[in-house]
Length: 216
Image 1 (cartoon, one colour):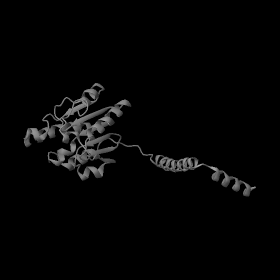
Image 2: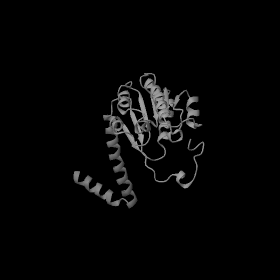
Image 3: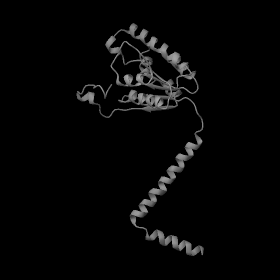
Image 4: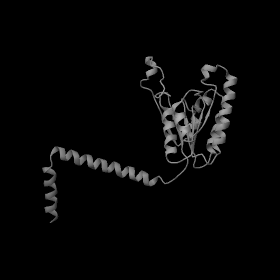
């Protein structure tokens, strides 16, 4: 009986068309992928606040961060944003998210190459960081975005050890998103997830200006 079954199986496979064999191989590959993913999901049981770093020279870091804030709000969570570089632009994300109850704190001096005043920028950075530190101690904040924070460290407006200490000591379940180019290694090492956005093409380099509703 065993031999007959074996012969039958061999016959079935030999009678499969090329497309059927291709479909069968695909099904088997996908099943192996599913088993691997399911095993990883089963193994990931810890719940904690995630520190997400979005860095690199490409466009979309802040946009991605705002998307995560929107997702948090969509689940009924309390979220906040501290913007360290953006200045007083008419930012579409801010208009939308403030309407949904997200707290915004904006470093009001604008881009550092516009002010060209180190003392003024340092004071503004300290003021914005004071707001960030307060939020990093607030257990009611589920998700906090520190937009363009990396520049404050690169320009030596803020001490990296002070920033790392505050991130380490935040509430256990608080998620934090840090965006900006050239993120300091100490923050990268502390982070749970790090994504590096790299440019391939950018409209600005072709002489196309930033446009409301798309770029800000």
